[in-house]
Image: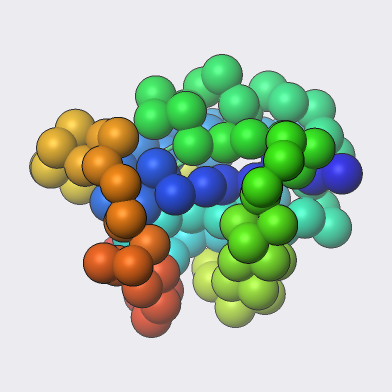
Length: 111
Ligand code: SF4
Ligand code: F3S
């Protein structure tokens, strides 16, 4: 199994998660982060750190799409290990539905 970053990360991108990961397996896109499923050691430490509650274990039902998305983008996005300044409008996007449709996680430019 692995932990996965899900929809509520999009545009919230708080980045508290990257500071606690013992194996540095977070990768940064323009609007969200993803976890590399082959590098995650399932420690679960990041899950409670996310203020947006966007990190879930892939054992939860219905997360297949997000597992696929995490695996795909982790291949090409840059690794992130240090928290940066979150977007100024993070809080406005917290809990909004349909973020994946509105904001394609690509191009993954990072900064
Ligand atoms: Fe990193 Fe542990 Fe979270 Fe996996 S579960 S991404 S290893 S902090
Ligand atoms: Fe995203 Fe939560 Fe990390 S919003 S960047 S998964 S702390």
